Image 1 (cartoon, rainbow, N blue to C red):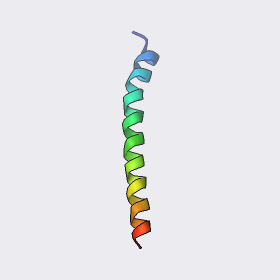
Image 2: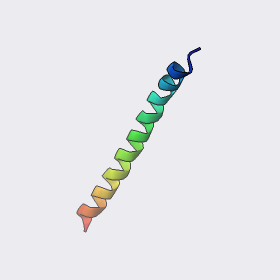
Image 3: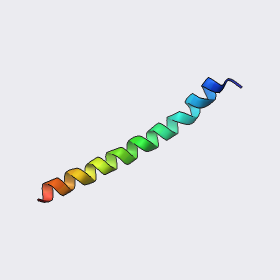
Image 4: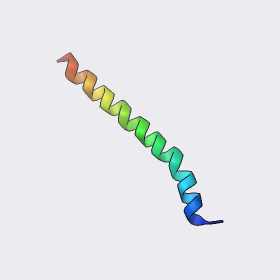
Length: 36
């Protein structure tokens, strides 16, 4: 099996999960700033 293909297939859900986490953190920070 090609290791590059395997890496790209694995990285898609990982990047998606990281993006979701980063978005939630940013949304939390924004909400805290708006409260003040």
